[in-house]
Length: 340
Image (cartoon, rainbow, N blue to C red):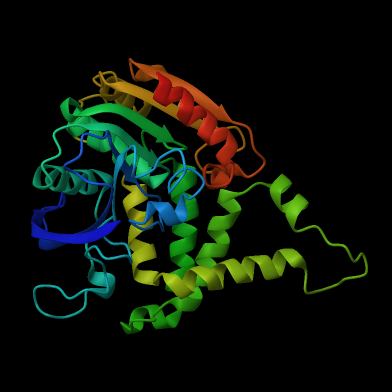
């Protein structure tokens, strides 16, 4: 793996301008004739796809650097190398909560700039899950001539009111931490822990919690396993991420709407279906039967309205997180897709 950076002037959908830095990783060699697999990571992922998606990507895994050239870019606003709220702006002060909102379309446009700079003529497989799937879909709509196959996992055409409500609840938790307004590098850390705890409830299911966090001692009145699990997961994220990045990335997710500025139709589903119909590339849509945050009907909608689309499902009690857990099922689907 080689991790690199590129910097260039960039204009957001909002009209705001900034010098944008993208951190990206390449597994394998761009000059080889291997198929290009470009992965768009989820909310708190990093360019090191071999680390966070190790069930499918890595040495001796289905997607490896011997048979594929794999590219993964850190989403702007994230905490893993691309321009973020903890970087300095043009006035040489740290952005903090003044960092602009990147829409999923902004991110896709930035990735398209990088594709051109890397002299990648064709992306054989563009793969994205969750927020990464939203970005991948936007990118396919912007530049479908250069993308052969699109793989969208647990994603959607626009972010639902339910999903936005979950994200707003997380942002309220972050803002309730007084240190978030104090413009400190560690500002909002306790709020971030609470936000992550809220998020986990949308990533999992009651069945998953009832199986993994069930009490063995029927006499307990406090210190429950589920309580310590939520606290631990919140702390774990707060040790590797920051509240300002998390806050902005949830807004990036909320911004997702493929119909914006692309159609005169006002009703959301009709507008999105019209836009999706313009996609002519092969699309493979993967949904999770128990997903609360990105329910299966959202992937069914994508598969119905993208002309050359096929729908696959993962059966799991792990909800949205199943794409990070159910590797056996996911790899079976990936194998079917690759063989097609």
